[in-house]
Image (cartoon, rainbow, N blue to C red; front, side, top):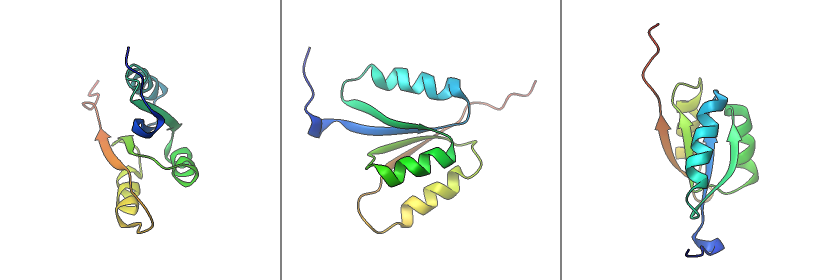
Length: 95
């Protein structure tokens, strides 16, 4: 098995309300040694993660109220590197 140096690790945060959504993504990311989940939680919790650490990727549940506003804020922050944002959503539950 190849080792991954600290410099090549991609720091990921996961934003979503359903715990199952976050746990599933954490398991997927954990299977790849080049990915390190540095935080997860709701919108408020992710704002704290963004202040406390440097992210490479933010994976966000697009259905979370405020998710698009957070993306806009990240886009216009001018100090330092911004994380790539991946918005995910499943089909609406019509039942």
